[in-house]
Amino acid sequence: MARPTIRKLTVPLTSIGLDELNPRLDPQIGQREAIRAMVQQQGEKIVNLATDIAEHGLSAAERFMAMASENKHSRFKYISLDGNRRLVALKLLHEPLLADGVMSGRLLTRLKRLGDVFEEDPIDEVEIALFENREHGALWVARRHSAYMNGVGQDSWEALDKQRFDAWRGYESREWQILETVRQHGSLSPEDLQNLPKIPITTLKRLIADRYIKTQLGLDYQEGRVLTTIADVDIIRPLQRMVLDLLHKRVDVTHLALSEDRKVYFDSLEETASFRERPQTPSPAEDDASEPDEAAPPAEKPKPRPVRVRPRKSVILPSGQLGTAPEPVQAIYRELQRADADACPLACAMLFNTLVEASLEHYLSQFPEAQPKPSRKAKVPVLLAKLLATTQHLAATARLSAEQSEELTKILEKDNPLAANAGLLYTTEQGWPVSPTGANLRSNWNVLQPLIEAIWL
Image (cartoon, rainbow, N blue to C red; front, side, top):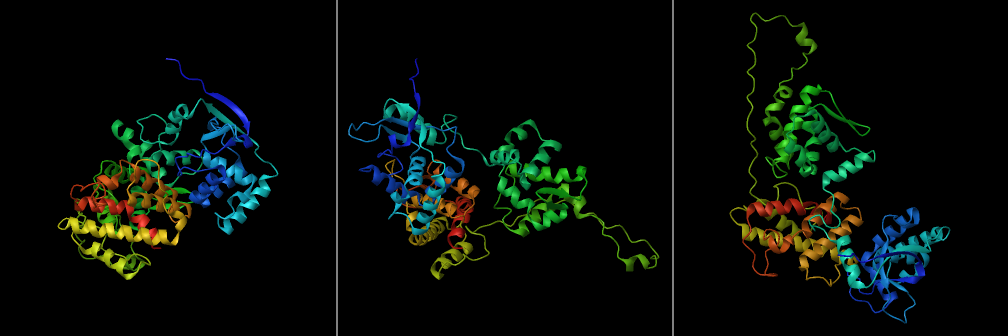
């Protein structure tokens, strides 16, 4: 079967217009309206993109996807099917006042300064891939923006993939160095080596950053390097055991959330017995003391013990408060710290849902620009749309890390967990779901905890 031909052209920037049917926005009635709607939706992100383009230019690996304009009276010869954010950023760099009235004064001032710099070395031409019509381009637009297509189109990196990329660039995180040590010097099976990218990297980070574990393993972090005072032959065994426990899900973040839980877990590892029995250096007073008449019997060696982590019954760990939240929200939070989620899962699910909704409403009322916009796609549950919008805004304002935002967005978008997972949303929005469980509720709190805490900082 013959593949359709896609022409590649270099065209003046002034000859390409925005798609007024851009899936990111509601249908627009003109170019100016489309630009202003994009500015309103993107907020500071569009200025960040303009800054990046002014400093680094456009990616040589990405062309604009375009088609010939269907409007014979339009001043634009081409319409962008993909790349509308970049196109708006370019047009704003050429003419910042296009955002006047829909962008805050602070951002508009920043944009004008960028425009002055951009004027010294402007981008007046762009490369496009020209499709015959909208339907012809739709196939490639979908591949560009869709995830979970079983290998077709773009495939998102796992957390370990990003760690590997950062290592190639010269930044090796502590957890990456630990994993590489275990990979190169441990005795992992071929299957474990193959599955290593699936390890919950953030939980490993939590372990090796624990003060007690660092002390026991003699770990120190200097100038970006992980150092240890323990001999290589001894250090590899406990590190490998921790990696394999996480990889095979023998422990997870619910078992390691508290410092005392991490201590119990570490001390239970047979591979750490030699560290816990390390002889103490005698004090000078002991050195000068006379020898006892009879040698003291040797201390009995502690026997390795199984992991004994206190079972967690509540949705939320029974410690701490919810930042600056008002008393009614704190009361819900405390109730979720006390209530037995295994015995009362429906009541806890309702309280959990109320806590999430109250937190989102509070945040979105403070930042109206973060409100989710109506979507032309398949109907998205309201709470899911608010969660995604709040996650994006928290990341844009650096209250959530890029890693936390990426991980949370990925979980929320995958198979619409809000509709299928009653532990997070127990409503009639899409029909009655199956009954939630305590384990389900605890798992979902672990997912949403960074977002809820960031809202109430």
